[in-house]
Image (cartoon, rainbow, N blue to C red; front, side, top):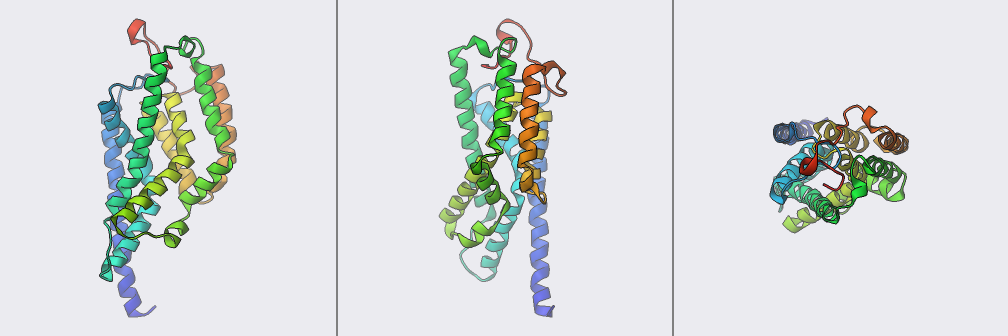
Length: 270
């Protein structure tokens, strides 16, 4: 290795370590804030989502906590390319533009979930009460998340999330380009992980335990070696888990049983 190459490689490596520390530090802060705000709020399946403003604040924070570790490879790749452009005095865009555009897609997903929740709640469907059909609905949603693991769309989106080649081949300059790349990567990430996020809603979206479980599953598939081989394992496990929740929800560790009476009762429809 020549001295000139070594001199260039060391600053790049240092910057990568620094940016990784910043990214993981942001995820840690998001986890701390999420734990602080959500502690004691898990009412199990059908947890009331509250007002839009409050929910949106919680959703953005928890999404950052769950997704920043798994999206780190793509964010660091974007940062390396931008830093190289800056070194050559070429137009470049701050990395946070890409990261915020990515998180914006998950914010839209959360708003859509909230709108669906409000719509179902307004219908006042008695079958969705936990002591009637609630466990079957929750179990069915979990099984659906498992079956999605076997679809071609899941495979395509997961491959995109794990492979940086689409960045190298389809790089777009400027702020608009960074926003577009962030949105595109966010869309693929939603396509890859929406089933697991639906499972979180089915088990209790304010549950710190299930939030950590889902975040770990997402990280394993998107980042760990051979994570792309886990889809079949996840499919079998989630379908079996869905059947367990539907048949005997009271025996599921970590699953809070909705309870209470009259207006305070937590139902699958709110």
